[in-house]
Length: 594
Ligand code: DGT
Ligand code: CA
Ligand code: CA
Ligand code: ZN
Image (cartoon, rainbow, N blue to C red):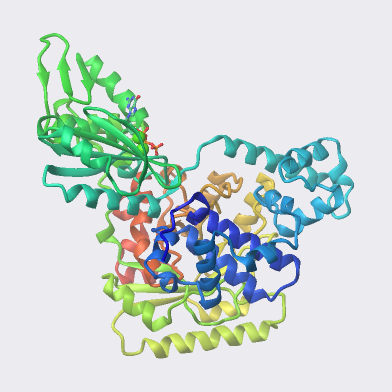
């Protein structure tokens, strides 16, 4: 086979976009619903993969990616081999390409985009967004049938958000950044001159998205390690290579910064390049008041001119009279004060988590959204393997208000309960029967009330209608929390990193109510969500609200993602007692029944 070089258009992001375009055409041409869902799901999966799909394809492993069936695999095979796929090209030709450009704007789906393009004759894909903005400003959009003043101003607002987002360089989501960092760390470790190596910067702090990857190596031979680093096989460009540092660019414009140092300054280097910048600036101010100046090499006493070096990061902080500050807390908030007063919280750890209450199974309850891949039994088994005391099944609610009658929905849930009980009869793990239910526009839940008899708890989540005005959105959520058996507010802000903004809510009111009703806020560990975001986690904690960390897994593999959620909790200053799924089965059951 001829060697095929990686190109930008083979990146996971570009492939996901391509598949979403195909799905959009299918929506507009009225294709089969399952086909549409399959493409959308494949796009989500690919975007969230920890490795490049292109690499997997080269290793012949396309079929191991969940959601890629034989026909899609053969299209992708052609696409990677030839640089294009005839089938995709034919599908995409059916719709003016400017429609796809409009779909990049938050809140504009295929139908809306198509109607706008048609009504305003926006066929130039280079100017379509600008043209639409002008049409909003001149009031033309409001005149289109089915649009009106309100949606015109919503579109305008969305375009402005989109333009702002475009100005910022793209950032990586965590799974991709971690696996790339691991690859480079494994590569470095093969060199015997490398004594120790660690990822620093935003990656070590578990920030929700990563700009570039920072690596530190401890070595006696700095020059040789740098020479070795710039030969990393995936490097497409060497950005700079000096005595103490170097940067390379790998595929998709991702940058890797390397620093090298000897063991004497390793502790200070770790501290400096873990950041954040805001933390370092505050630390420097604090140190200066005590008569010290800080650098990546150590601490200088300004009076005596004596210079101190640190092999360990703990000693660096200790020298300054500070308790050790975990990297997740180094964001320049009040962590230095806390460290000074020895009040750094005892942050939650992964091993304290006893179960996962948001897992989607493959049981077909005719859901409003996608099914998971594993059976109840497989999920329980895997939960056991992860060391859990219990799991919670939380499929999407059966589609309500469509073909199914209320009675049929109740029957489905009854059957599901029975099946769960039978599947797990002789298996020694605790379980809870949950359901993730859509919050409707008016704050009702998408479920007949009699159905709650067949579940232990409900997760109430917003899956559509993200752009309501703040007061209305707040009321909507508050009302949802009054529905019987709602115990968890699922992925509260609805954000999708780099794709969808947080909803606009008076959070204090939600926190107040959640606390009063003993409802937990979810920290959704799905790496594109990480929702509740750490800043809101911290605010909610101050209200005395409790949390639950869930993976929202749709496959067994995704159940392993709990640590992403734990990192959000840690960044939000949470301790064991703030998080309900650190409790044993009995206590958790008591809470669900309360
Ligand atoms: P990122 O890459 O945007 O996700 O965020 P970081 O925090 O990894 O930022 P990066 O890669 O620019 O720098 C890594 C760390 O190095 C940063 O957190 C703190 C330190 N650092 C870099 N440049 C400066 C600087 O000019 N001043 C100070 N005080 N620290 C810096
Ligand atoms: Ca960085
Ligand atoms: Ca950097
Ligand atoms: Zn959900």
